[in-house]
Length: 379
Image 1 (tube, rainbow, N blue to C red):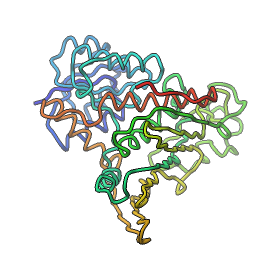
Image 2: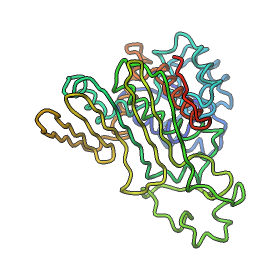
Image 3: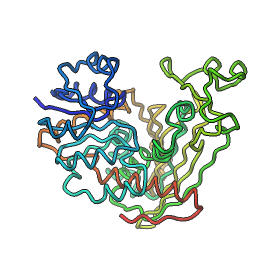
Image 4: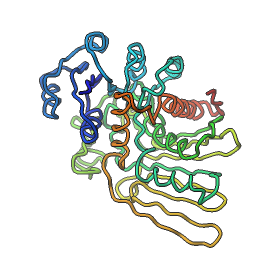
């Protein structure tokens, strides 16, 4: 049976492992985490992982255990550090996105050799049922060669980016790296072999800012009864969604609340992408419009629908998809692929190179928005 070690066992890696149980057999034999409390160990055991050996150091875990693979689920700022460590041992790795949060870490990842096909980056949207079907339509030639993409991500559950620790951009790298990293990856996957060469971007912070003291808690605020963002006044997205304890109108909220990116490709095609974190409830939208000479494809994850518009005869085909699990079915595909990589019978379908490219685009967008310049892509 495959033996897996986990570096940073949180909710996301727990979800990935629960999904992987459906597609393969393995055992989590070791966990390295900076939280080894009884509560954390109980959480791990309740999810079916018993007789686990715990380490406070990832290096100690990797040097002591005989593992078939490692899952990295730490906070974003340390993804690169632990990816480099796993590369030292040559272990198949499931790496959460974004693969890095700084230009310096991007350069360190680019220097890794021999690991590209052993690393499965957590980009499940490229293998969701909707994107998979869209890719099938495109590859069949039904709209001709893709000439333009207009992608959008209006996030209805975004309060956590201002109320929780996610507001710390030193940890997350900001919302291009948190959200656009997924969306730009599936766009790159859709358009095929084209190579991004230049990026420009803008971002705005219009709502989630203010003059409340840094670190203020909603529980300590005298305006909690009337504030539209206080826990008692918020209608959350989903029954189990917790908005977080911090004031989102404080001086330290961090994070833009909207952003837009243009990406030019090596053949002259460009794509546009816009993200927004103000919308709520049914205003949420995530998907893209893909334009070819023969037709246009439009799809939306929230509505579970793909439309194919034929340019020649005006016909419209509509395809509806039911919900198929986490990340619209993509998590299961990636989990199955990671099992195959650990067993030595597959290579990664969401490689380290893919993760590096997406992070490079996001870092370029971040720099472009800050400096108001075009940024060339080196890869």
